[in-house]
Length: 280
DNA sequence: AAACAAACCTGTGCGC
DNA sequence: TGCGCACAGGTTTGTT
Image 1 (spheres, rainbow, N blue to C red):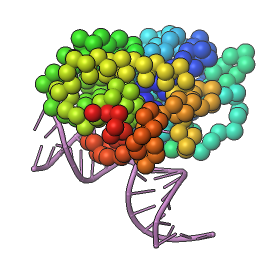
Image 2 (cartoon, chains in turn cyan, red, orange; image 1 turned 180 degrees about the vertical axis):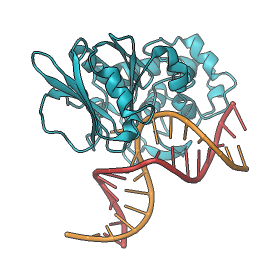
Image 3 (tube, rainbow, N blue to C red; image 1 turned 60 degrees about the vertical axis):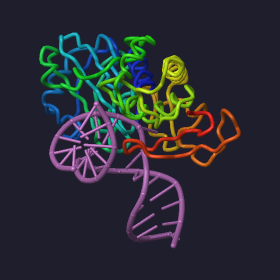
Image 4 (cartoon, rainbow, N blue to C red; image 1 turned 120 degrees about the horizontal axis):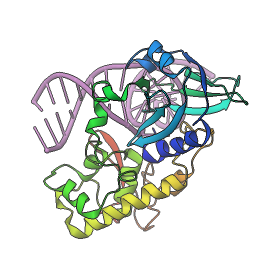
């Protein structure tokens, strides 16, 4: 579910609310959530310390602990991180509860119906062994920046469909199914077009679209779809879905040109939405 | 290099 | 109203 803008919104929410709060206790209610290590490793690694900062790389959320350890959370399809008052009634699928012992006690919940998500605490020295995917991540357009020349280089020799490349986390980190479609639309490029055939003008448009779409989505707190799955750490949804041009709009009039109907196709096994008139 | 399917799970929406 | 199927924001693994 959550892509770069959603994870960034969660990161900002946590940075503003749980950084500096002493962790007094940890409950783990689902072994799958801590499968990367163990419930004991998570509990022992968090209890008695404090989160000093939150970073984000692609869709990975990384917390620095005062102990020197590191916290990694990946929300995958249905994960949510919520900060609530202590003792608040817990929703179904609340798999991890981190007790924050402030003057005003609160809890940090990890809620995840599909249990694809993960929470892990580890020694940063062992990061390459415990979370090898992190080492394979490509450039994060927001955190690292991404210049037109660098983007052109990433596209060179890549014969895949552009959308498939945008979804490849080892090339560019953080873009998922919603934003890949929205970026292709804003750039005016057919998502099925081979990545190595864009030409300078399309590369320039793609560069601008990547930054414009991601920045606008972050400014809107991400996209909360019909199922209301995604929400920020404060429990409030985003509103970028109101600005979606093509995602999940098959059969509806294109919101950009108004003279064609949005089509749905499948690229690399994922739904892809585009306007055949605006995107070539 | 890259397409494809299957896997991991639960929930929801739709057609009948 | 109920049943069964398709599909869902992600990622890995194994097979062509």
